[in-house]
Structure formats: C-alpha cells, structure tokens
Length: 247
Image 1 (cartoon, rainbow, N blue to C red):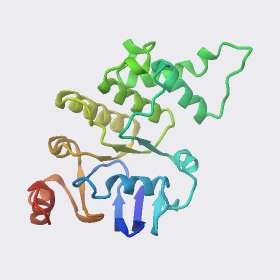
Image 2 (cartoon, rainbow, N blue to C red):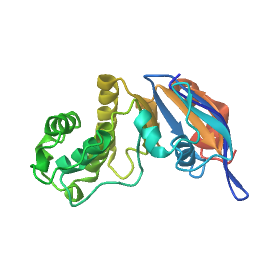
Image 3 (cartoon, rainbow, N blue to C red):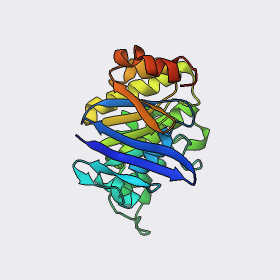
C-alpha cells in the first residue's frame, strides 16, 4: 500500500470539511476521487500533503507516518501534486520552468560564472519530450494554451521525481478533446514511470474511462470506493452524486 489515511478529519470552525476518511491506495494504480462541490476532495489532498493540519487522523506513505511532516519533506519522499490553479512562471520558457524544478530537486544553484541555461539540460529536455512539448521548448509559459499549460505543470511535477502523483482536476478549463489528451498523457506517464495516480475530477466520462478505482465523497465523508462499474451501479452514489439529488 503506497498511501493510507486512517480516520482523517478536518474542522474549519464549526464546519467539518473532511470526516473520518480512511483510504488505501495500492501502488501503481489510478484512483479517482469524485463528489459534488464542497465534498472535501481538495481538503483531503491538502491533508495528505500537509498544506493544512488534520483535526484528527493519520496519513501514511509507504508505511511511514507523514501526517505532520513539512510539505517540502513530503515532496522529497516522493509525493507530487498538480494544483487546480496554474502555478507556473508565466514569463519564463517551458524549458526554464522545468529546469527550475530539476535544480530545486537536485539542490543545485546557478553558478554566476557559468552558463546557467545549460544546467541539467539533458534531463529537462527528456521531460519536455515526455510531455509532448518539444516544439514549444522555448515558448513562454504564459502564452501556452491551457491544455499545454496543464502538460507543463505535469512536467514540473515530474522533475521532482514523484512516485505518487496527486492531480486536482487535471482537465479543468480545457475542452473535452484536450481533457482526453491530458489524461492519455497521464496514463502513459504512469505506465512509463511506474507512478501511482490519484486525481480529482468532475467529468464523469473522464473518470469512468481512465480510473481503475473510484472513491466517492459526500459532505466530507467517503460513501463508496470500488471499480468504475461498481460505482456506476451503487444506489447511494446515484442518489448523492450521479443523480444530482440531495442525499
């Protein structure tokens, strides 16, 4: 089991955003986390990466308790996260955005007396090729299409060499066709790099086509986990989410 949460809860004042969530994610799998807005999905990701502290419960990564580890140490252990809102340097090129991540991971710094733009060049170019942005290597990130920006964000996260990749709505803001291309890329990278993927998604076509397992959240609680076909036929899921009625 690469990731496990036990009784994870988070209160914001009188609001319980995540309520007693216990998950087990097998290594090498692709898991979707779905649920209506306000179900607690993003807060769950923030608890896993310790961007917010839990009110109660534990998070384990590869058997190690990481509940209160600083986020930068969690990244170094091998958990990478792509955010729903872009976290790019828009004035820098595709190459430079990924180069910065590579240099950060390797704990290197630019030497003012050497050509910094060559630092870790081979690794950077390999990542750019793997995300399909070779022809845009020297393009400014801010001028990329939104779909290509999502690819670049994935590339930046890959530069940190994760074994578990958390994706918060990877297809948000892109067309259905672009969304499928982004998910094809994610699935290809998962296979090539032996990654475990956990992603939040609202597009059910994407979820049912790319997730091997699905966890459904409602009002901070997990109400079902299983294979896509089992989730489709689950009466409680249909009532709370797929049927878009109040549970």
